[in-house]
Image (cartoon, rainbow, N blue to C red; front, side, top):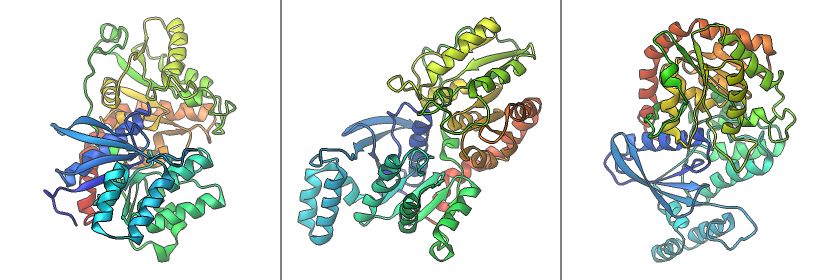
Length: 436
């Protein structure tokens, strides 16, 4: 195991800070945080999606950290230095001609080759839930397989950070996923079901004890009060007796998915569900609802949460004047976590919006469209408060919301008790595993 204090070079794949998805940004910063907790002087390079040759400064655990971002692409121009084919060619050349001078030359010509060839550790988190074919085969081939496979061609051990594995519906995707998992040195799943799923996928003889459970890394993300925060008149309307309910509306579900025709097979109409949930909560006259977006993609309106949140807000403001509010403006992942932290109760369809709440001891209900919610909520003992929109009808979903809302004081107490241990387990996951 690499000792603390050594100048470790680390590549981190599967996240960036420029997707507009605050969950992905939260995973990026949290992954960097746990890497620096183990290797305080590590040089971290984000490799994969994102802006090429970009440096950024993050404040993590009270200190300034410089992170480099490099892109890897798969497109028509196979001569770009960032293209997978170019990187694969360099990997093969380094294996055929393992000469120190030749390695220096190739590294000098391409910063991505340098980052991979000199890396002491390579981690991957695949956006938290993208190691699956449910978002399309092309996306899986690039982010689920090719990026990880390139790492192994450079002769590097790959450590898969806590994420969701599968589902894999196609035979080819299962074979490719099995190849990645077989060649990974360590496989962390962020839910217990994921541990069993990967064990089944690999088969007993290929596990070698490398499949481990660890909670979602975003539990250790630090919130930050944003400058110029705009949440309407919530501060003036809120009293000591108010119950501020945060509501994240997913633009993707609001649009019916990428296909606009209930792509995720929800059992109930999402828009009607949101309206029904709010109507129930508003029966308590103390309730104030704060709409909180978590994915900001104005260039891709089907996914854009602010657009969906504004539409819901306008209807609520007309129906319940003075009791509905909207978080407006531009925020990053830490800002959004702070805003969510202002709530007394939370409901979200973006899983990391729920994690932002739960990790601050705020009782939450996940309005789920995939299996990833259940496992993450189970990790803090709240699995019964996942409202599976693809399995339950509207009345069943409402009963889950009602139960959580009525039990919110007990839930907060439970979270206060379990969260310190969860954060410690995340920060020390590499030590607990006797080194990654």
